[in-house]
Length: 173
Image (cartoon, rainbow, N blue to C red):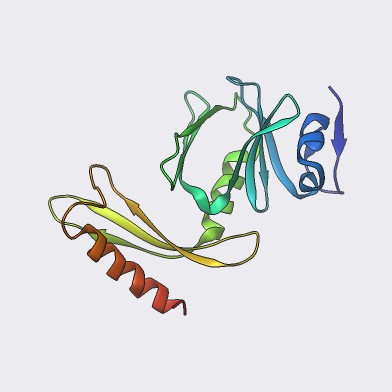
């Protein structure tokens, strides 16, 4: 397998990734191989990609990551998405390199302001103002906790009011 060096300090980027990402490959911060799917998991400044057989099979912006969990025992990284898409689970092996740290840093870079909303009966939601790292635009997100539905009485009203407060604090209408 041929690896190319992008930039003076950039990570070693496999040619398969360079082929699939084209110009986007110049922005690679970290790349690691998933042992389960054999896809390369690629972190850039603005996106997380999975590349398999020189094709992009996952293309998500960092502000779409809800949570990421690293398990040392299994070397497994699980990423949950804000839009409730199925979680991405990657087995990164004994040496995950910088990928888990880069994931954490990129996701944190998107969070401008957040608050937790107590919906009663141990039900919770989070409201977040996040930044699109590709263009700097700010956006509001509502992430409902386990067992909470947007159709439950009062949920939309309470989360909307909380998100409106955050939006006002950062100057969004």
